[in-house]
Every structure is written in C-alpha cells, then in structure tokens.
Amino acid sequence: MSLAPVISMRGVTYSYPGAASPAVNEVDLDIGPGEWAALVGANGSGKSTLAKICNALLTPTRGVCFVMGADAAAPGSPEEIRKNVALVFQNPDDQIVASIVEEDVAFGPENLRLSRDEIRARVDRALELTGLSRYRLRGSFSLSGGQKQRLALAGALALDPAVLLLDESTSMLDPEGRESFLRRLGDLNACGMTLLQVTHRMDEVVHARRVVVMERGRVVWDGASSDFFGGEYLRWNFAEPQELILYRELLARGFIRQGTVPTVLGMLGSLCL
Image (cartoon, rainbow, N blue to C red; front, top):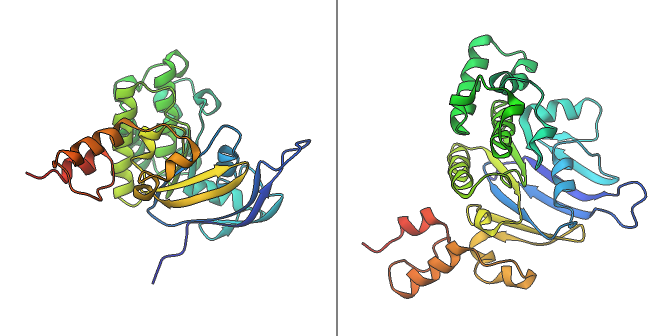
C-alpha cells in the first residue's frame, strides 16, 4: 500500500494582484514522503510561487493544496504546516532574524518550545551540517553572502522538518560548498526527509530522483531524473550538466553500466571493477 503524499495539489491556481495571467495555473501535483524532487523551468515559470504555496505562505486563488494532510487554506493550518515544512529562500537576508549565528539557528526551535537540551542538540547538528560550527558566536550580518545562505539553511534544518523546500537556496555558495551541501541533502533524504528543490542548475538536478518541469505556470513534464536526462531535458533547452557528459564518456568506454542515474555517486557505485 502506497503512503499518502506529503504535498497534494489539485487544480491549484495562483494569480498575483494586477497580473495579466496566473503565476501558477491548474497544477495537479503529488510529492510522496521521502522523495527528492527538483522543480525546474525558466524564470517566471511559477516555481517559486508553487514552493510558497507548499509552505502556506500563499493561498491558492483556486484549487486545493494539502500539506501533511492539512488543507493549507484552512484557519490555523499554516502554523501547523510550517512546523513540518521548512522553506529556504534565495536571499538569506530575508530569513536571518538574530544578531549571533547560533541564536539565529535556535530561533525556530525556541518558538517550538522545545527543551533547552533539544534546542542545543538541534543547533549543534544544523551548524555541523552546514559547516558553520566555528562561526557559531560570529555576528550574523558580518558573514559573507555564502555563509549567510548556509545560516538560513541551518535555521531550516534546526526545525527538523519532514519536508524541506529549497528555492534556489544554493545560488550564493561556491562550487565546493554547493557540492558539500548537496551531499548533506543526500544524507538527509536517505534518512527520510522529503526534498523539493527549486533550481535552474542541472548539476543540482542530477542529485534528485524526480524532475518536475514548469512552463508558464503549468507542470509540463514530471518523471524520473533518469528519464529526464535520457533526453527529455533537450526539449526545454536545459544546459547539459558535466556529470552527464562524464557519464556518457564512462559508458562509451565500458567503465559504467547502462541505466545508472547520472550522479557522481551513482557512477562511482556502478564502475565495472
């Protein structure tokens, strides 16, 4: 028996005031527990709006959105939903609320009224996951742009959410920092956390197991990442990731088996030794 989706949308439409057309238009979408789905599309395709609907920051103009079984439009639901669903924005300054790093990470757990020991454990873990442990007593606004982005991510992880929404939230990280964090996301996903990642970077999409393509507010393709990189990505002129180029080269030389999802870890795990 399949598990109920953690996010379920039916006919979801959202129009910003004064806009000529809906930002999100008649979207049907289910995200299952433990999935890692990448939400991709051109600028203005509706990706960020859809993520905000998932976190009950926006209420659909039409249609229904259930998150963790709760109707996102029902009174009292948004507060409950945000206990289980964390959203990390592209601009970290929009989420930093405290002047000291560890105090900012502790802000969310404190609002959940957790015990002091639990708050400390969550802060320590979130700082370690994001590589900020040595900056814990640093002033939040003295951090670099990339460090601020990791701080916003740490604050979300400290909530211990069942679902993590990431809206272009690695855009200010350098390549090494981005790859490190993606590996951490893989660890979290392996432990059961559901990830919905808004991104335009194909080198991030290869880490996901599912790809949802949006165009003009609609979902125009939804499937496994292996199928997406099997050729579907060409339909929307997405850039070819380096991982896919390397995958094909290794495949041609007989070092890797056909059908492996083109990620670095997938390639290493299927090398013919």
